[in-house]
Length: 217
Image 1 (cartoon, helix red, strand yellow):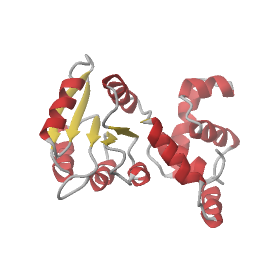
Image 2 (cartoon, one colour; image 1 turned 30 degrees about the vertical axis):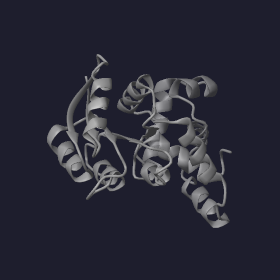
Image 3 (cartoon, one colour; image 1 turned 60 degrees about the vertical axis):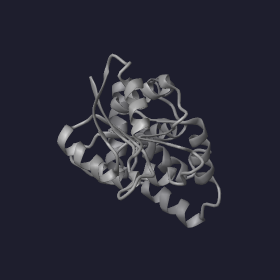
Image 4 (cartoon, one colour; image 1 turned 135 degrees about the vertical axis):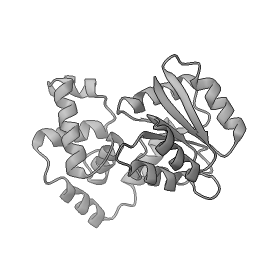
């Protein structure tokens, strides 16, 4: 079972999410929290595998909570679930370690799929969010910032750089394996090396590194 924690300041939203997730045979809602502070405490107490996190909450918002949770030794995956028009923090959330960013109009099927992907170490972004992220990463980016981003990649091997680019293009492990003529186990090994060398915790941050360096357009 994928143990999931729901974090939202609206009880009605939490009830709806619980109803959706508990329809899946492999997902268990182990707890709820109504702000970021409660979320961090609940992670310590309940040990969830995945956290569904709202952004705008009183006292301690979802961005701060995501960063605090992802810094834990045994950190669960965090998926941001919020409204698109009112939140300007997509990039900040992903840099804090969130592995997904979904809108609250996401279909039940895609929400459950995102939980499963996050639990498996993968990521999922709403199409609108993906477009917004790409726009921010590829426009109005100073030359110095791109140069600094390229410098971060100097320690990578040729194969690691190839995997980095494919992750930046949004390909899955199986697709990368087929394209680069290697096993999925080898892809996972290269990803692990990328996480270590780039000091990141998930493949979304790997993709961000590829965009910042200008390797993906």
